[in-house]
Image 1 (tube, rainbow, N blue to C red):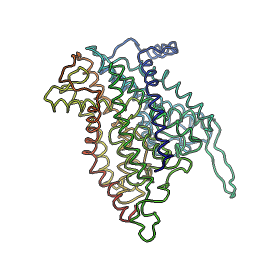
Image 2: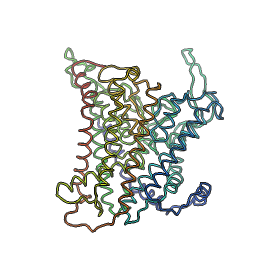
Image 3: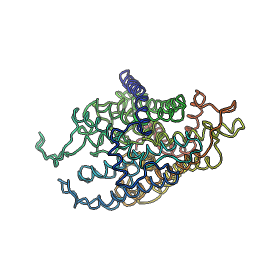
Image 4: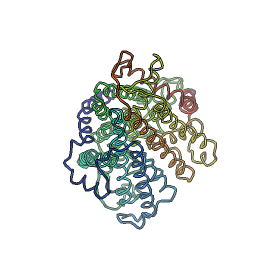
Amino acid sequence: MSLNGWLQIIFYSAVLLLLTKPMGIYALKVYDGSIGWLRPIERLFYRIAGVDAEEDQHWTRYAGGLLLFSLASMLLTYLALRLQHLLPLNPQKLGAVPDRQAFETAASFTTNTNWQSYVPETTMSYFSQMTQLAFHNFASAAAGMAAAVALARGIARRTAGGLGNFWVDLVRGTLYLFLPLSLIWALFHVQQGAIQNFLPSLDVHTLEGGKQTIALGPVASQEAIKELGTNGGGFFNANSAHPFENPTPWTNFLQMLGIFLVPAGLTWTYGRMVQKPAHGWALWIAMFVLFLGGVTTSYWAEARGNPIHAARGIDVVASAAQSGGNMEGKEVRFGIANSVLYATITTDASCGCVNSMHDSFTPLGGMVPLINMQLGELIFGGVGAGLYGMLMMVLATVFIAGLMVGRTPEYLGKKIQSREIRMVMLYVLVFPLVILVLTSVAVIAPEGLKGLNNAGPHGFSEILYAFTSTPANNGSGFAGITGTTYFYNTLFGIATLIGRFAMIVPMLAVAGFLAEKRIAPESAGTFPVTTPLFVVLLISVILIVGALTFFPALSLGPIVEHLLMGAGRLF
């Protein structure tokens, strides 16, 4: 680890902190209707769709709207991908996307996962990239934000019963939040060298006399929302390691900042909505502590490198460090610090874009992105999903604290009773259930083992990572697994749908239940949610839940691989 590397991590953290409140203020104004400079366009959308913008929806109608919109847009994308060869903006004359990949891709982009089992530049036309995939980048992000704001309203309101209007929240999030920010981000990327055109791929001759095909296309516009919407799906197969997507250190920094910007600001927004600004900052601190722990561990592991490759005379295996650290799978222009920082950020959030190959990290360095996702997409997390995921853990923490002192659990003046806790537990248990069950199926099914490129614990880690990334709606992968089969395309598509909707519906139910409750004044027995003790207890609950659930699986994968690496064995 170097001083320069730490200074870059500190600089990133400082900028994120400085932008949290301004971003939070803007997001608050977007969702309370204070910003209305596009109000005529907004009203036009409502009129065309037949939406009553004044309706304050019960949680069942709010969830129904979200599910209906997601289903309809997913089916539209599936049809567009299957008919791609008949549609315009296809200069490469690419054929229809296979049915299994069309299903997986439609499910993946609808759920903000953006898992890609295909090579984008040779599979997706410009029409598919722009009208389908980029559309979902905006729409799925706006839907996640809407769900988080609905939960915040449910907690803040007094016996109102309603959570707002899903269609209004969806439109406002898109028009006032993601479109303006994406325009700024895209223009900066173009200025730095990212491409934005509709030209067909270019065939060139190399200095060695060979022939190379260089893919082109409307990259910068998709790159912007890829990070800001915590989507992650790259225009190119190399994702943000590709110089057309991520050409300079400044675009690399802006991409990392874009991933955390909205989720971080949303903690401040929430604090103001519930009239507890200090509580919003407590959530931010808990998220940041978990982020810092992850980036520190991964940076240490990657800077230390592989002891087998260290040069210390005869005692090679016993050496404690690899000269220069582990640079396998990393861009030289970014180095270890920025590669580790990017990997930690993208898996803390539900983003999944990468500027290095996670499969080439050391066992412990690669375990950090895996754990980040297994904690439940709540370390800043996806736009919206990070906040509501953290709030569900807050409710679990408050419940445990209430049991410890023998009082009915209470959160911000509202009693937490059995029906809320049942929904919280459903939310918490669905996630590990789908990960561990599908991982188990894949490691015993011949079709699952056929896709492995590595044996032993690393092969197991590849499967575990894939079935963690998909229900976590992350989309990154170890990339050592061949996922272009009916077996994996089908299971990955199903995993993304369960990870999104089987968790978002219980969360909205909790929001609806809390919206119906009266707010009682705080008493001496009320557990404070703005203190360091609360932050420590919240972090402890998150880590304990993750450790108890996934430690056995991690022991079979990265942990045992690390121990065997020290003994001189690689996989």
